Length: 172
Image (tube, rainbow, N blue to C red; front, top):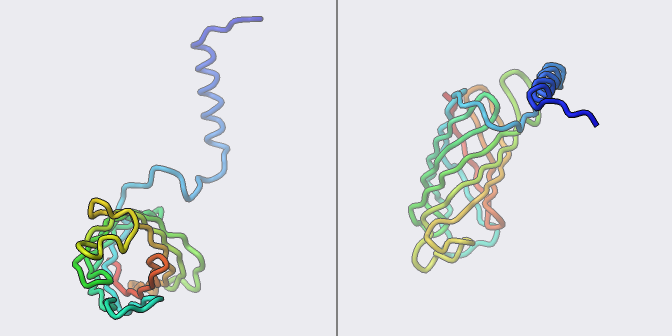
């Protein structure tokens, strides 16, 4: 068995990796880390909310205002302030990803979005209405499907099995 000096092995390995990097296919859309560059900002508000199992205590007027910062590679970070299902002021801070589904024209496109983050605001007798809210802050994940027409965007957001919300906003 021949022993090669470690330096030569590292140089050869580095050269092979470099040659593979130039001949490999384009990067996956889920490559990490995301580009830390601002592509656009999205400001949204709630238009309509419906609970799947209505309760007289449920609030369907969320008064949501959200702000999202999007990167060129479809990652995002944001925050939303709203009234939860029991009319308590709440905050959702999140990160997420958009998934382009269809481009009808240059200005009209359909996409899915998934956000995940921390939700604060379910207090008192309603603290146990969301899972894992032991310290007043709970993890949350929200899937949505949306459409963009120029600078206008709209989303249909599902909040667990509890209900859905329609939002609309402008991108800048």
